Image 1 (tube, rainbow, N blue to C red):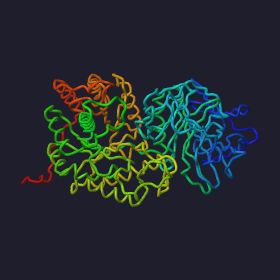
Image 2 (spheres, helix red, strand yellow):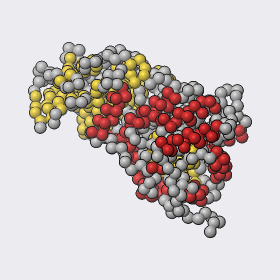
Image 3 (tube, one colour):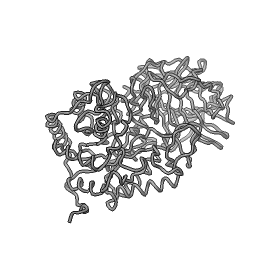
Image 4 (tube, helix red, strand yellow):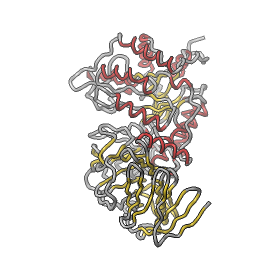
Length: 612
């Protein structure tokens, strides 16, 4: 049911809902969202810039209103723009208010800014982003928006270092991209939930089908005014009409309740799939991943102790992703009598980091190794990098401007065929018969002047890439599992397990940060198995405390068997004494009993080479 209302001379009438009133303050040029608890003021502005071509966000003219299917729609036309035509479209539903910008013309989408008129002069130096130094310049802070009517902004993306809730005068970023710099900015979830909390009273999130999420960053940037910005990187071409993703504003009783409401809104609008009900029971069993022990042995071989804390990848650790090293790890696990259900063979086992084909110099019989674990009732995951092209043929890499790092091109038909074939061989019982993949470094997606073969970018390209992996894996084995650190509700159809990711925290007490990650994962993908991770640690006491805490967060996860993998400067890595393992075994046995997880019955498998 649609009803037109001509209020172009007087402006739109306030819209009253059960939880809020939404109105236009014409004198201030602001939208106002009123609740019993708070008021949110938003500048009636927005820009859609093109690469090197600024767009103006001021001077909008009210162009009409209508009612449709229980919602009220307002439209505002831009008096000045770099496009042939630009509209600001506001949809007021019973639960929320959504803002979209529509443009017509020819060009490419660089940045889309809401609630501010953002000038497009670039800073020459790095801009301060929260408590972090961002190496890539942000837009200059010449805003014509409203002063924040809220005191704090909450970011659901775990970062290190920094707080999740910062003063409203500090910029923040939600991103699908990982950056290591002088200060580590590691979005442990890549991508995370794309929504901010404004105080404890409102949420502001991105709403669009995943294929339309061709952006990488979602920035909150304030100065004299505040705004929200999506970075499309100039990779979305327009020839005709283009509609931006929506920014959804909604009142909430608390930030985490608001984030859960945002996730529900995505599903209600068919922008995110319902959570899977077909995750195999074995995915909840305790896990051992060999990466931490690979690191321990590499450090001992090089200098007798662990490096100072903060090294993202320990040199030499991939050299211990060998059959001999993992046979030794199995012996150590047996000595400790740990009731684990899944073993992950980590980085270094494959010839090419993005293609799951074993390095024959390191693994003489990976199929036989997996088969023996299967007969013991255990499952095996293989580590796989998402973007790193190490060992990849040149023609399968994404073309780019000089000076940018190489990456694979998951939109290249030749790469897609190569990866699908390798996944089938790795997962099929006729091949290696592995049980899934631990996909790492999803945040290493390309940013800048790259030229993908297909028409994809940002979050949409990451999802399409994982769907390629997931479809090939599931075709080879129905109960296989894809583990990612994509704690984003739009990735529920390409993920069976969420990993909380590396700790990278020098604090003795890691419980608060890991509990936060677990809560965010639970909001994004409710009911999914959560790999609690376990590395790196700087002290045995911190490691043991987290081992005790893991069953409250998700799946117990173990990475090291002899020592913690890192050390404080000038100290050796602490050894883990044998008497600790009795307690760990009891913890895992209680976990298995509490969650009714039982080790699978031994599976029939082809005999090993040399067996009859």
